[in-house]
Image 1 (tube, rainbow, N blue to C red):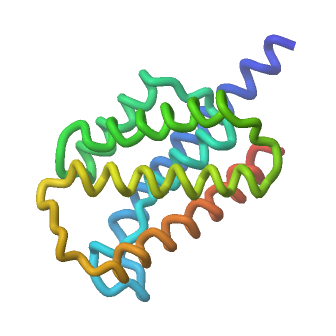
Image 2 (image 1 turned 90 degrees about the horizontal axis):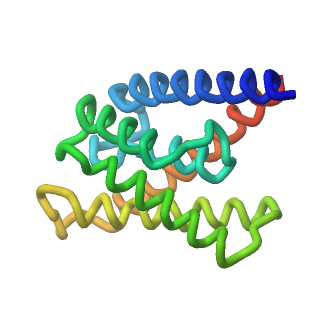
Length: 163
């Protein structure tokens, strides 16, 4: 029984690491339907929200700080920005799960929607430029693409977790 749990946790950690590598590659590729780099989906936020909402890979604050610093070193602007975002996502998810009972698929999707929106607010608040003149259409498009990436990641993680 314990060995099965250890194998499952190891498999989930490998899955997290492989999806981080995939997110790193995708974040450096340009999508054909995206006009500017500012409207690219945020793959790392979608990935962390997926793993936190599905309660996979037993993410804790230490792992989130390490992942956030790694993302900051590879693609971020400010050192610690993604670490703060990931910890905030984790804390908000923890608080919401303590207050509410989330069991159905619609509730999990609503929670993911809220977590992604919250992370975008933190990303905007901690950005270096504070470019308030960014078009709302671009931000909305980026948010919708990130939600779509979340759904793709979620489907893929559920598929690979069942094997």
